[in-house]
Length: 276
Ligand SMILES: C[S@@+](CC[C@H](N)C(=O)[O-])C[C@H]1O[C@@H](n2cnc3c(N)ncnc32)[C@H](O)[C@@H]1O
Image (tube, rainbow, N blue to C red; front, side, top):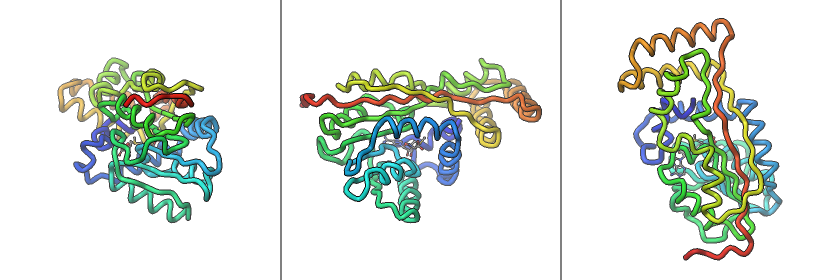
């Protein structure tokens, strides 16, 4: 539920609005610590196959954890770049890279206008960013532009229509999530089509359910529910029932919150002509 009550803070157009950067970092760290997320990331890292000397890019790199993973594999002859529009995220990522003594680079920018030459990278990844973009097709065209022919792209994103919160009335939970998340909240299912439309060939598809523990979900669920009630999407009575159901579920252990993340590996064909 990272992207519920805090969805707007991850949106590029609104990164300056919040003073709650530390909360965003905490949410990303909580996600990175989930065994379910670690399993999908390990699969993705394996599937994409970083070689020593590779030039790699992570778009919407957040705290930079996956940039560091790329940097370790690309080695001193390669390059690992993280790009994010949020200066506060870049600062955290740079500090963590310095502490780990890993020579990764972090650049301020947007997925819509990557500040890199054509055919520059061997591989590009982007995780849980497309759900915050109004135009994921434009971002995918940019990935195709900066990748060399034969270069690989790995896109990972949630599909919030797959979210399960138990206990709780599924209709009420669905209304809260679908209202609070942006228009591309269900982009997980579209990753493959977006890549094909941008001229990529698909190599593999993976999936994993991110399983959230109560300590992370409860504060986010409360904020999301309160916001939805304040905006008239659910009634205050429905909010009270949802909160009570959740409290009871957590107390008895009859609790579940998950959302499916999809991952697609693709490559730019070796003989792909530029459209412009
Ligand atoms: C949910 S976080 C995911 C961070 C990281 N990829 C991860 O999986 O932990 C979304 C990230 O996308 C970034 N972002 C938002 N709009 C973007 C845009 N137009 N271009 C690139 N990154 C963007 C946000 O600043 C934030 O760091």
